Amino acid sequence: MRCAVVTLRVLILALFALCMCAQESPSPKIVVVRASRILNVKSGKMESPVTVVVEGERITGVGSGIVVPAGAQVIDLGDATLLPGLIDCHTHLLARSTRPEDPNDYAVSLLTKSQAYRALEGAADARVTLRAGFTSVRDVESEGSGYADVALRDAINRGLVEGPRMMVATRGVAMVGRYFPFGVSPDIPDFPTGAQLVSGVDEACRAAREQIGHGADLLKVYADWDAPTLTVDEIRAVVEEAHKVKIKVAAHANSPEGIRNALVAGVDSIEHGHEADRASFELIKQKNVFWSRPWGLTFTRLIEPGHLQPANT
Image (cartoon, rainbow, N blue to C red; front, side, top):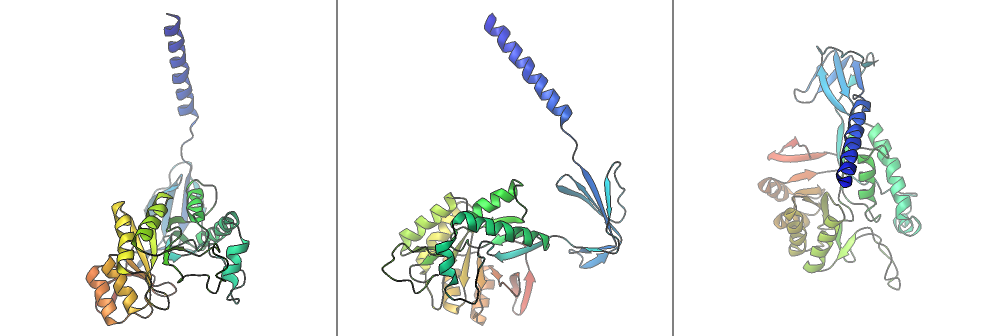
């Protein structure tokens, strides 16, 4: 009987606590932003004037005839133009260089910067990226900072630091001897590398599984460097592991042979592709694969020969 009384008391206290929490939970703050015009990316036209309603962390209304909710904070931007958040489909937020003019800077950074420091650099770059208008990024490899990109992504998602939504590829997969840093003495076998280096199908498969297990949103392979690197079978092993868990594979590929190998292996996007020939583009179109060209065209899908259509991630 005593146990039943104690249990009832605990239940009453729990219900009371829940009621108090429900009463104390404030409604989401409503902010209304007014501006002269906004770019409608669907129609490709400017619309004027515009009112944007933000409730908590979500935009709940955009248009010219929206009624301002009671109690909302109103911010009038005057003669300003609004546009949706931008998406950068090829970033390396954790790859800050201290001396870009020095070819050995990459190796020096790997040796002298801890992964914790690299993550803090990434946080600083993420803040700059967000404030430049990019609200989402596809970060295609952490460049020797291990899984710091996963930590940065999670910290942004939890509101600990400012930054865009991140899709991260973690370490990347490259062929032994064909990724940064080069020219390291063979007497230093454990010198850190910019990607996870593999040789053979089994090692490629293991690298893919490790990176997926540590939180990768996508995987990145290096199909070539100054010449083709990973074999079709090695790339295919990575692709198969990624596709099992419904994530995509991006391939660094510049040469026609590297592009062909990556496409035959089943990758979902070609990164760069600076030396692509007509046959490369025809195969990209045939495979219905995205082409990501940083510092130029952003993220495109080939529709017809000679015609490029911007595509979402």
